Amino acid sequence: MTPEEHARKYPQVWERFTPRETLVRYAWFIGIVFVAVWSLNRLEIPWFYFLDAHEQAADLVARMVPPYWEFFYDIAGPLIETIHIATLGTVITVVFALPIAFLAARNTTPNAATWFIGRFILVASRSVNTVVWGLIFVAVFGPGPMAGIWSIAARSVGFVGKLTAESIEEIDRGTTEAIEATGASRLQVLMIGVIPQVLPVIYGTIVYRWDINIRESTVLGFVGAGGIGIMLYSSINQFAWHEVSVMLIAIFGIVLVSELVSATVRKRIT
Amino acid sequence: MLAITDLVKVYPSGEQALGGVNLQVEEPQVVAVIGSSGAGKSTLIRCINRLVEPTSGRVLLKDTDVTALSRRALRRARRRMGMIFQEYNLVERLTVMENVLSGRLGYVSFWQAYRRKYPSQDISRAFELLRRVGLEGYHNTRADALSGGQRQRVGIARALMQQPDLLLVDEPTASLDPKTARQIMRLLCELAHEQGTPALVNIHDVNLAQEFADRVVGLAGGVIAFDGAAHELTPAVLNEIYGEEDWSKTIKKPTAERSAGEDRGSMEQESAAG
Image (cartoon, rainbow over all chains, first blue to last red; front, side, top):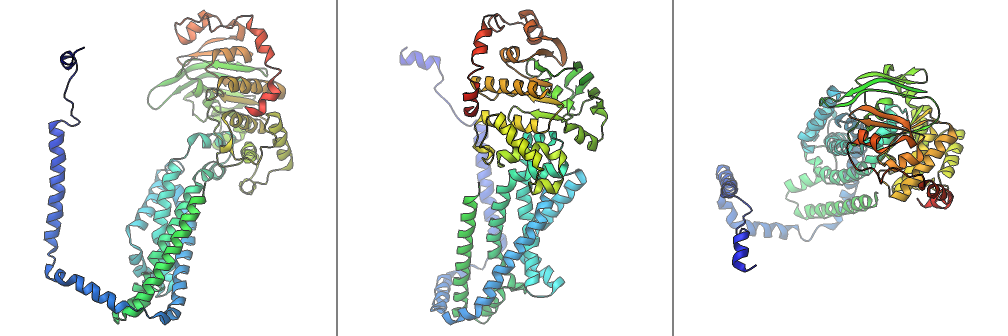
């Protein structure tokens, strides 16, 4: 076959998108740029302050160094309290999140009403930020770590519950069918047929959430819910930047450790 | 032992899977159920223990009308029916022993099962069955570390753990290589005869059905098109079950009997490797 014959026999033009599709793609792009520009306009940002932003930042860093290292003895207690708030909050999360996950998964929930209740709890928990939960629980329990623990738990139930429910919905139906076929009760099917299949996801999610909770509990003190946050807040208000830098370094340290722990645990789960 | 009368199943989609099936199994025999995909084999087996809810008709297991039972009574009836699956359906992350003992779940409480505290006679029976299916020493191995043939052996042990009155077997060999498939079919049929348990075996492979089953039932379009001894299968019968095709090479010839008898002796060595 000569090249001419070949060209006659097979098409020489191929395009991934039709002209109409190309137009739509450009329209989306222009639309997104428009939305971004419009939002910036609406915010009425005082650009004037940006002119010396780099000088302000340099000034702040200069005030932070050298860190006032002795301050560490003052924050060690609140720092440990912060970790306790995150850990206890996560423990409470586990107790509540697992039953709710079974209600919120379509394949394990008893009926449509229980499914709705499960989903509602998960959405309600996730739609409120931990700090806002903190404000609510400070009003209920008064200021202190108790409010912090419950606000951590209230927010984490939605996170752990949702991810667990999703993994329950993806389990192998054949396995539960086989357990049902032995004459096992509903609870036995959950325990032997369902839970072993989702256990790695449950462990992984809980450890990951604990890691997030350590970070979140460092700011709970801003609203009076215990931990190192209250000291951070007061040092910032007093412009005691040498103290602030010590606290930031300490928080960086525990977050780093918690992330290492969480990564190691998640890697070892099979 | 098992009497199925006018069993009908219409799925919510409107598809009729079973159109009035009548089937009796009186003696402890292996009944192969053959038929093309979509003929209703799986539905038939699942209607017997009501993993699929039949639309109408009756299923009698000895004197129990399975179709009329409450949820609670159904669970008690399911204890008497062992089931074996194409994809084995083991709990992958549990050990072989936990999987085998799960056959006793219908007899133990939730807390016994939670703490894995099964009665001692269950435990020794589990060890005996593991030895019998060729998995001695594998009790602490996790199911996901086993090969396909080994998993199916665990599946068989789990079903027999129930000491069932009936075995329901859904395509036990369809996910296995030809050699392992033969070993599994042989083991299954030997055990069914040893324990005196009738078995209803859905199977795609006509050759395996002919070789190992005592009786063959052919399903076509949700009704029984053939019910007879394995040697009664003829091209005409297969045409009726599956539709027109050249069956001359599929039907087992009398000379093939001897080679089938020969590899029976090599089973002991093969069994653990499967």
